[in-house]
Image (tube, rainbow, N blue to C red):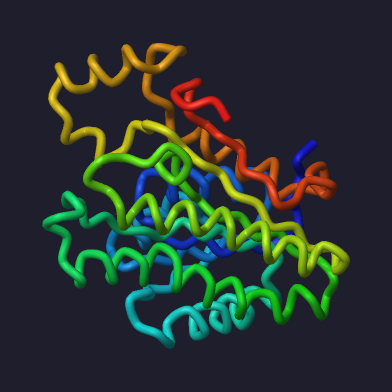
Length: 245
């Protein structure tokens, strides 16, 4: 079950906690994986850990042409692209009254526009082959909102709407488009919280804890698999009941 043998995958933001866990999970299920991100040392370290069937491509998705180049690099390295995981993202938090145009625009550029460009580029080969899986890593705040994150929440909410629209366009071509929306996950970002902050936040989650990156990765593996061929335009919420939708 969930066998990805002979499948190829591109994971953006692979040098981060969730991206790295996703790459490992896809690789474990048999997929050939391209790791993309901005931190070459971290990407090479992960590639060394995984061993065979791994490629590395450093890409800065703030550059308008980077997404197209990345998709072409994946196709060239692996022969085709079956699975695209749009995980790359940045945060520039500020209250709306104080948020600059640059803080707004940079987050929308990386977290939404670059994801669209990469999806568009990947779809060309997927449509031709009549097979593909596109999975966007959204966020619980794309549904709930969060003070100080108008830009981030807007981008993550728009990713869900974008995915539904594209799913409707390409469903007849054997391509599914879905999202995974993590809640509070143990990553370098949550490590910056104090023990008191983590305890207070965990109390608001019905399961009483933060999630693990591997739990997000498991949802991605499912959506990438043949078993999820009849699932498209959906968002899987991995948040311990923090927000129930």
